Amino acid sequence: MVPGEFKEHEPVPQQPLCEEAMARFYRALKWSFEALATGRWPRSDFQGRRYPRGSWGAQMAGKRLAQKHTAVLFCCKGDLDHFWKSMQAPSFHSTSPCAHCNADRDQSPWWDLRPTARWRQQPRSHPHRMEPVRLCPDWMHSKHLGTDAYILASVLAIIVFRKM
Image (cartoon, rainbow, N blue to C red; front, side):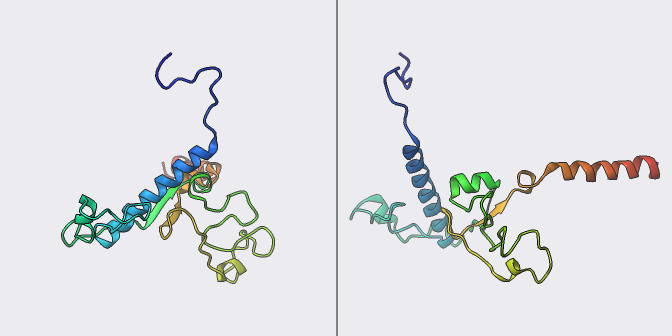
């Protein structure tokens, strides 16, 4: 048997293990970004535990990471499916799909594009794993690409048949 291969009678790990691993991963990632934003070594590990007295972490706690420099992650880019499955953002196919506004399918429809639309007046901050980082949809994976085909074809038609 090859190392890491499952035997016939061994159960395959289920979703909770994966979910727990993802939760730990995002906690560690958030901890790292918070340290970069403050520019100082954290006083506790990514699980919130204080470093033991005399340990390397305790010696580093509170010290500058990169002299006077800091870094801020202001946007996490991805498609809506990734935000829903991995980041715990609202589901894109729910009745209230947006993490940034209160648009829904009934009272504040997202297709109401007027400046006075109800969803525009009510900002929303949906908690997700990377708070306070803003989730930014990757538009190439969050819109209907058929629209781009029509626009591109129209531009090419104008260039070829009218300008050339």
